[in-house]
Structure formats: C-alpha cells, structure tokens
Image 1 (spheres, rainbow, N blue to C red):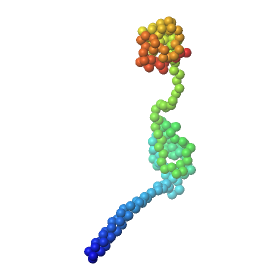
Image 2 (image 1 turned 60 degrees about the horizontal axis):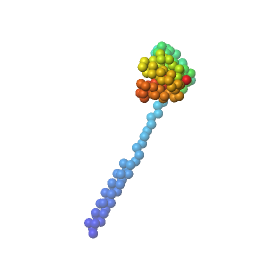
Image 3 (image 1 turned 135 degrees about the vertical axis):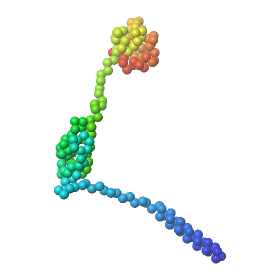
Length: 178
C-alpha cells in the first residue's frame, strides 16, 4: 500500500511540474515599440532630410512650420530632371523627417482617345479596301456587293469568296456598315 501512495505522490508532483511548464510556455510574448522622436536643434527647429533630384541633398534645420518649398530652396532648388508633379511645395514640414524628390519618368502615359477610321464595306472602293484586305479579296468584296447589294452586318463579308473567319477576325475592328 505504501508503494501505491509513493507512486501517486510522485506522479502528482511530476504532473504538476509538467503542467507548470506548459502554462509558462503558453504566455504571450511581450512586444515593445520604439517611438522615433523628431530631432530638433537648440533653436527648436526640426532636422529634415531631403534627397533625390535636388541640387544639394542633405539634412537641414527648419522651423516645423516651414514648407517643402522652403526646404527645397535650402537644398539649392530642384535639378532639371526633377518631376515637379511628384511633390507639393506648400506641404508644411511639421512632423515629416525626410523627403524624396523623384526624377521625371519620361513621357506621360495618360490614356488618350483616338478616333479610329473604319472602312465602310458598303461604299469602299477596291483601293480603299487594300489597306485591310489582299487584292483578290478586295476585288471579290466589290464584286459580291455589286451582285448582292449592301451588307447588313459586318459578318456578311464572310460570304465573300476568299474571306473566311480568320480574315474577318483580323479586320472586324477596322470595318463598318456606315
């Protein structure tokens, strides 16, 4: 009987020890944050860094109420490669600690609307059709139109001898009925 009690006590102690280890490992890790402070000089001015397309990149001391234009002026101005649309000169420095003036990326890639001239297959001459069809296809289209009258849909050109689905797929965006 004494052996059973000793075994029960040992198992209990080992169990408590194991349970204690498990609960310790499940504790949440602590996360600490380091807050960056704005560097100021003896006059209370903020230190701000400017880089990129300025004449003299570096760190300058300005009033926190100064603007980005003031900082650019201290840096000697912008270079001829600077993209003037990439920054706001009137931005107040306040809590900002660094600025980057980007380079012009070349030609603007804006969407433009271009009028696409389509060929009217009901009125086009053979020479006008040569811009989208081969000579034999253009002749066949004009002959078909003379024999059968006007096309009622652009898909009707596939009824012309020598013009199939492949040709239609290539020209469908270039033709119209009017």
